[in-house]
Length: 141
Image (cartoon, rainbow, N blue to C red; front, top):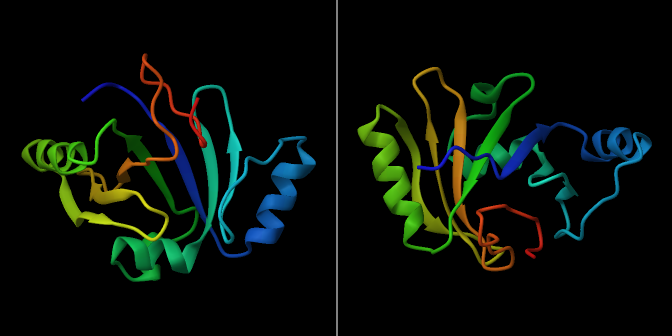
């Protein structure tokens, strides 16, 4: 597994207020589906996502996420790579929160927690293929 963070997703209770903050910093939004706000960074993307939806996607109660909930996303090149990375994480001591599965926006994802409880999403996003050197960008290169 390469050392990489592709997408940082912040679970937020009020997406409009949260987006307003980043907008006020002068960050420019990337095009994203309704209910999601994304900002392309240098080699990564910061995403804002409703906290209740994030908990539902992971299959855990919202209370487990607590204050400042976040997922760290590891994007892969191929759909099949999601399950392989989850298997690798499990072998390394992770807890699988949700197995690899298709999602509404056309991708394929799964979730694991590291031994300290930090939550990672493993994602294949057909609309955002990785660059040759592994960099991620919300809508691809």
